[in-house]
Image (cartoon, rainbow, N blue to C red; front, side):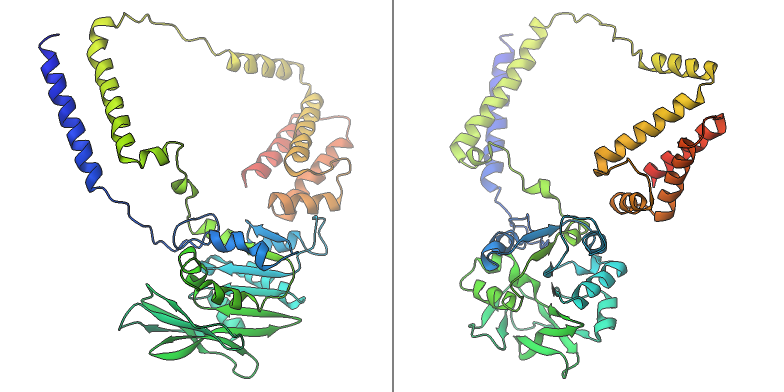
Length: 401
């Protein structure tokens, strides 16, 4: 043991020295990924804007949409049984290319009913371009990384957007029916904010989403530009899109810090902590040889669950009690429906089928086959093995799709 003490001291010294050297050279890097996520505190997240929405739209309800717009708007339409009807302004900032065609159609129907759609993104899905008859152009920033943003009808001082390699703008739009609300300037001014009338409502398209990010809102007076852009939205409820951010692969866990994060940022505490851990590990390694007792082999407890299930299944198989099994499967399935989807299963009619298919995201015809078969079984008194097998296949199909 005496021979190992010098080795232990030298090894510990080398480890601590290497750790300190690495720690001194290690500098924090800033993640400039444009996630546009309302939960992200990174420079190009939009958590600051998201937290300020209740102030910008006082006395209005702010709702975050975590589902595909088609599903959400259909579930909150006049024909639904949701807790409210979606009416107001739908806001999408960045990542609009993840919108599916049925979601775009539903958003246009939402606007046609007298509501507002606001999208700020560099490019839009082709279906939006074709439907609204617009084209997006691009101008590279060859001199520096700065562009200037201005509003047409609102008295707001022009702001600067830096770290900007180029600008997207509306190269083609209906200059008669579409109203120009703002410009961006790199070498020359180009339109980057327009209002398009659609049915009873309006569509606001903006092509510089970085203006709404944490970095730009918190820098200088750039927040005044964001307030001016959003001032074109009417005073009503806000539906803030989060679905496209989820599809973009934002990882919420990367921003979570441990309870020790602040202490570990303090250099003295950090290396004291690491040194204590290293000595603790070395102490356990060198003492384990002397003090480790023989560990007895403990036979693990036998899992009797499978045997129990086999016994019960054999009991039902021998008695041929198909009715009992069918009743239990139906009872258990309906209990799952009540628990998972908060639906009343007393009456299994067409209205119940519509609600279940909507909440579960299943095809109406598939749900109808299952419910109709359950209703048919409830009306029978005599059952066969085929009835049980068919019911089980319907239920498994419901959960698997």
